[in-house]
Image 1 (cartoon, rainbow, N blue to C red):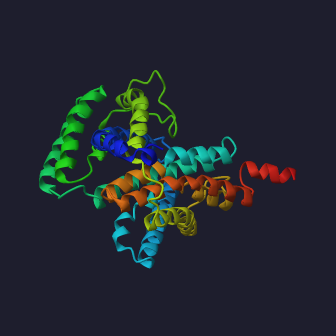
Image 2 (image 1 turned 60 degrees about the horizontal axis):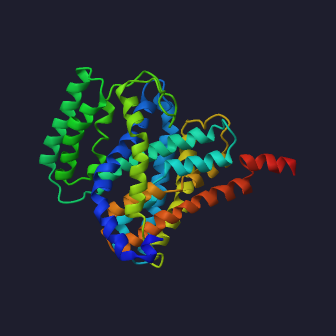
Length: 357
């Protein structure tokens, strides 16, 4: 509403917020996402051993390849090569929104919900790699960046071996060096804490995917979550304020390319790769049907926050960025697509309703 009624004041405030929010604050958002990956891949975690992690990772890979291919095909078909740089935008999955939609569709305890969470975590982990490899923020200075990153990892290793049981030294020493390494190396500094978080000592338990650490947990990884859980929510609020404002009339080819690619590419890519993986010998989770998987594919097609972040990294300020932003924001329609698919296929809560009829 602000961007559409008082654009000049919105742009001024948003511009003032973008560096502190996008380049520094979002580092803690990605840190908490990495914390979930670290716990899930530890012994006893939801992604350990590898056979348990294999199918969600395969599904996440397909859920990125499908949208990327459809996006590129549409952009080339519509003769808009300037949009090609945004190929990764529809690859994103917003964990929070997808999780809420899945919970609204499937009954309590249904295995499709944790499968979607595993898929979303793997998707975000792969997205971080894509972000680092394909979206530098400036000229690459890999030697300087590599030396600083080596120092950051060395400091973190020394802290870990010294059994430092406070997360602040890891953040202020290793994290600061990592941030400088990425910033001066030409990569996005919001990823600064991703290589540092795995060094934080943590308890030999996994409370579950996005289950808060117990209040009595005092290991550094749990303390990081305790201290930053609510500040990160404020960061996300400011991220939306600083980046989501776009004038509604700035809908264009980029909008429809992002939206079509994510709504069609996610379910198609996920189903295609899971079919291949099952044919190769992997098994679907118990009590998860192919109909459930189709609904999961549509629920995963909500890019929203993560897609928005990819958009601002892919394009400079201007019409192309605004078009891509609109596509990222409109991907919330994946929730309606998931509900419609569930109703048509009689999945989840719609299965009971069909039985009564």
